Length: 137
Image (cartoon, rainbow, N blue to C red; front, side):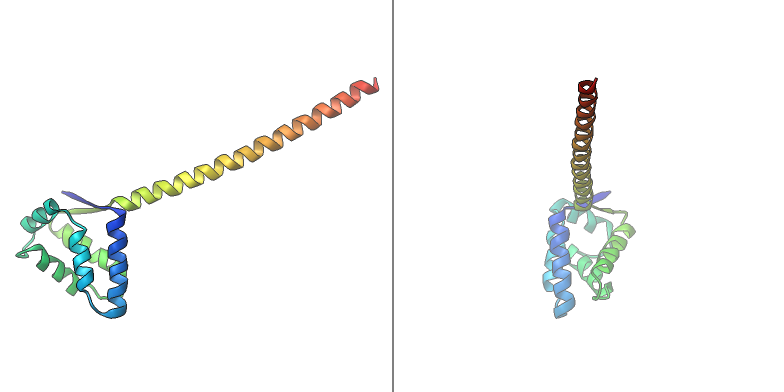
């Protein structure tokens, strides 16, 4: 089974994790983690894991997390879900990567446009030179 987290959920979890690191309070982080999953996702995870309910599952993840690195939190989450045969995907990362590619393509297009203008300038210079030569004869 695959579960996708959208970019908004990932952002909210990251912000809550940073707050938890600073404040030492994981309650908001727990809420953000729970809200990141749909009801159907939660039901499926509960069916697959040994935890009595999803709240306990998230509590176990937060206990396992070292509390000092956001990326480690996602690694623990992925690990716990993998143990339950659930593959966690980050839909937002795929979209963001696509946005980066589009920006690069746009930059390439602009650069290509600049090249075209330079080529046109060179062509005009050559035509002017040819006209000058013809006038000389």
